[in-house]
Image 1 (cartoon, rainbow, N blue to C red):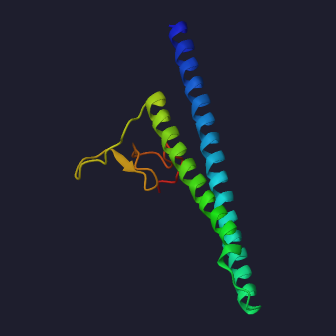
Image 2 (image 1 turned 90 degrees about the horizontal axis):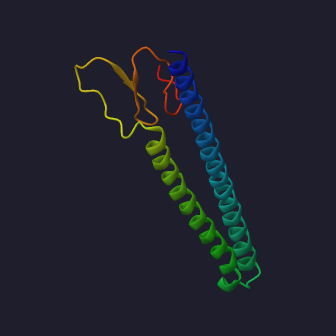
Length: 137
């Protein structure tokens, strides 16, 4: 009996550890994506300012803008790569932590709240999603 409790606690601690690690990894990726998006906004502003100043001076040359445009394209590519990593991380977490794909309850069937953020089916008596932590009510 005591051994069962110890093993159960050990499994739960391992699961919490893995969820915490996954959460941190997801947030790291989200922060990087936000930084890249901010960089893109700044680069677009710079290219607009440069283009306008070149036009004002009657020296407009698209070749002077191309390096900024290439840098913007590279940032968009990095965002796509990070979004792919995020999907792979989510899939890996589903496989390791279980849960699989969740289905919404059948109308008329009692038993759960569906998280508006991630689609997880949660017990009726909980206030926060067990998967993503979003407020259910």
